[in-house]
Image (cartoon, rainbow, N blue to C red; front, side, top):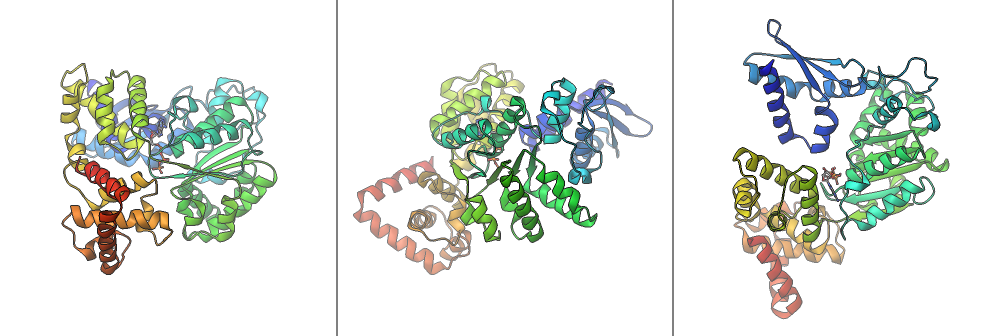
Length: 472
Ligand SMILES: Nc1ncnc2c1ncn2[C@@H]1O[C@H](COP(=O)(O)OP(=O)(O)OP(=O)(O)O)[C@@H](O)[C@H]1O
């Protein structure tokens, strides 16, 4: 028993290293290890409801089995079961509710939901079911979303939409680089809406999942159900729409869902790693629809915001973090919030392990040795692209895209120049890393920037700042 608990703790810690925190809190933490059957080598684990059970079985059982097999030093099978009194089972049998238990089959994504009466969604069990159906992560809310210059516009738009779904900006299109809080913000909208009772048919779906729903509907010839389901939603949150690239049938289905929902003033919120016109292999009809509401960027957080995020997250985790320490981490890790969260986890685990109650800059230096040497010591072309993109507030993707507007072309040339100056890479290698450009393009950039820098004080200053940032 002790052994199993120990195993489970280790297993969760190992999964924490691979999975983002919201996945851990949404899927892994609610699991409870029940027993390990020595003779059969079966680990029984309970999940709180049917939906979580199916999801975990489908997405995490393999990883858990590998970890269990390592721990017990023999092949272990993991058997998931529904906890007694789980959310689905907890629904009072006699309650006159239209809410149905979330179907078990993964393919049931495409099933049509029963209408949900908002006033009836009061009981805790029902709220759970509604939440489960929505696939929302309750941990991602407005109240724990730190605001700064980089995201204030996006947050304001999100709040506005949460207050007036379907009527203010439809669709709301949020874009930005990885780990900047797009997913967080759209879950926050969904959670706010569910709480306010303004709409109960809310659904968060990652674009990849939508694609696979379309495939399943296709295989089962169940397009009517698929359509009925998506068209009936009050709020559809669709994450990382760039994954629709080249998926024509998916795009077509989404186009119909989009038209139907907007016509009924049902809200659609989309996220992407780039703005609509820059999306590649997406039908132009869809692109123009995406741009027809409000399109807002989320930028990489500036230093003060990174500090605020660290302090806030540390507080939530019960870690005492002096400001000086937060500044140290924030100065060295610049790219996104996910990276900051990872650093905080590392630092607090390190401090706990070494019995250091107070976090100091020294502790951080030790704990983050690996991360810091990557961000300081070695200057890579990727580093340069990221730093220059942050500095000029453009997307890293623009470093290798084919687009050539001046606001992108100059930073790209600057990055090429710095790549030549600060790394050992050859001109053709640099060209390759900038979206397969010819070495003569790189040479042209290097000559142009070195010439311009000797004549333009402002550019020279910017290059100094960039060089300093890159050299740490
Ligand atoms: N402003 C913020 N305040 C608090 N937490 C934040 C903020 N921005 C991002 N985070 C946290 O950072 C992590 C990464 O954010 P999120 O998953 O929303 O990024 P994303 O932009 O959707 O990235 P991707 O494109 O990789 O999906 C999450 O744990 C999220 O809660």
